[in-house]
Structures are given as C-alpha cells and as structure tokens.
Image (cartoon, rainbow over all chains, first blue to last red; front, side, top):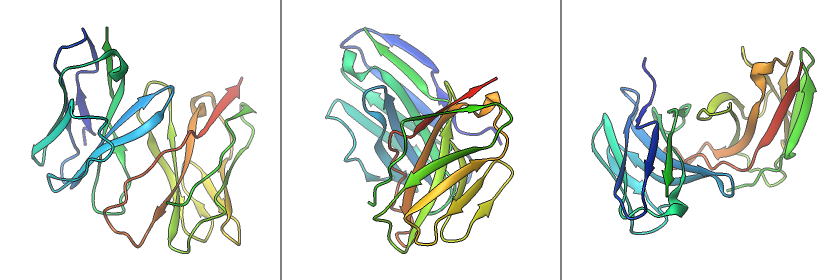
Length: 113
Length: 113
C-alpha cells in the first residue's frame, strides 16, 4: 500500500492567499482525519469524516477553514484567506472501521508570510 | 475523555531498555490504552495498544498496572531511530467509530549513542 498521501509537502504563501491541502487516504479506509500541529498547541484535531460525511468539525478554528471529501479517495482542506497564524504542519490520517489503527500521511508544512 | 499524564522528556543510552510511563488515574473500564510515536519530520505512527493484559509486538511491550491507572511502554533495546515523541492516549472501546484520537504533549525520548 502507498499509505496516506498528502500534497503539497511544503507550501509558502502570502497572507490573504487561498491555500488548498490535499489528501488521498488508504484504499478501503472509511475514516479520514485532518490534524494540525504547532509547537505551541501540539497536535490538534480539526475535522473528521466517516464514509465521506463530516462527523465533527468542532476543531476547525474559524470560517476561513473548510474541508471536503467528495469521494472515498480524496479530501481537501482549504484556508481562505490565509493568515500567518495558520502556519503549521497539517496532517491527514485514515483508519478502517471504528477501532482500527490510525495511519498518518507525512504532512503538509504551511508557511504564511 | 479520560486524561493521561506523561513526563515531558526522557533520555536513554543506545541499546539499553527504555521504560516510558503514563498515568491515567481516571481511566474507565472500557478505555483502551494506545501508544503512538512521532519521529522527526514525520506523522505519528501506531506502536501498540491494550486493555488489561500486557501486550507485546515487534516494536515494543506494553505493561498495564493491575488497577489500570498507569501503564508503561517498554522498548527493549533503544536505538537512535527510536528517538521520537511518544504519545499515550486513551480511547473508549464502546464508542465505536466516533472517537477520534486526541493527542497530548507526549514524552520526547532522546537516545544517546
């Protein structure tokens, strides 16, 4: 298996620009999670999906953040407009079933100038 | 969710055993104890999990106290590649599906050659 695939690996953008992060979960996994990691706040859960349906988005910081999962093999996390405080590493993870092991991607490092 | 307490950091010599402690005094009877680790510049990865009995796998062993209020992750022979942040997480086994993993600060393990 290729594992969870995230793109881009690195993104540098200017404040106010739109940022789109992409994730391809492991085939057959029915849960998909978006996490954000910073030095100050550690690893935070932003949103997760089950069978492409958002289950809990209470971790999404504000309306500038949105996430979609149009099909079982693709999800996006969008920030519009981006701000310097959004700089972080964003991880996507997937899992099969309610109690399976969580598999993480390598992350997308976002820097907003 | 029940909370876990881990030391911020630990140090070990290479090729010696490492015991990483985790306190979870408010654990419920249905909480599983999960361990993940995060190597530098990577996403977290699964290490081991258990409920009541001690568990062994190729990566590590998990020793669970009889009252389940604490547990210890044991790396039998630390290598430089084991230097990582280790997370101890509780997850309710009854709430199938809608219980994403919530990561704390973890323990940063340094391995000295």
